[in-house]
Image (cartoon, rainbow, N blue to C red):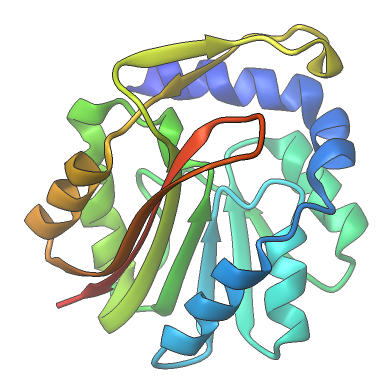
Length: 202
């Protein structure tokens, strides 16, 4: 697992500025609002926070939020764009937070860098830092196997995504002590299909 994640980090370190430029304005208003409405408290962790876009939104909604990412360059972008935000370079497969720290975990487009044979292990780590009745939101690209993506706007740097089926991700969550609140697969206009799941820790 570590080699795949290292490769992803290396790529995002190279394209951090461009990635932030093209993605900072793409706010998922509906999903963010739904996530906030489900929270039992105000302490939130953004896993794979990238350039800090969603952290900024949570701050505006008066939540106590911290963003983590393995890419130092992405965290640098986040600190530049969200001056008062709390950000840390951290491996989300083994976090330094204490047990039952957060009311919610938000993860938009980070879990598709996790090989499927390690997904249960990573979800157990999410559960460890989440309080009972805490909420998790995960969004990944839908499909089977793995897919290499190369885009000219990101300097043709290759990124490899692990694709997941909706029922597959639901099963992983149930196996690690979560109850599904809402689960959908949707199609981007002229783009990818996404699996999005809201779940609650039992």
